[in-house]
Length: 84
Image 1 (cartoon, rainbow, N blue to C red):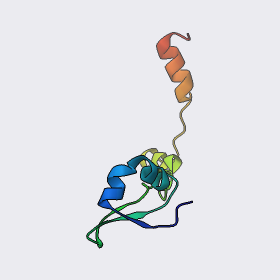
Image 2: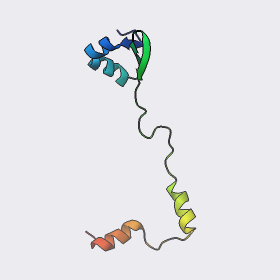
Image 3: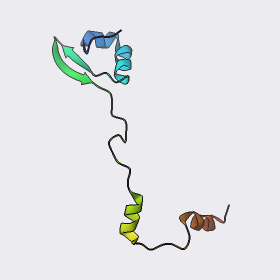
Image 4: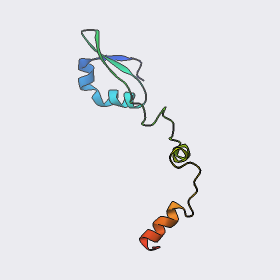
């Protein structure tokens, strides 16, 4: 089991796959040169985390008000495509 949170450059060179596996599991690792911190490897934030989904209904209301179309977009596209 791994207990260290930092590695030296030599260890990084020789155990790159294992170290990247640890990072992939969520661990942050400091890379050291001559016992001085040089860089940090940390997992990336998943895309979309922390961002809210856009409110499309709000956007439509802002652009078109409360105007209702007589047909849905699906119906209009079906007509355009010849109701395939």
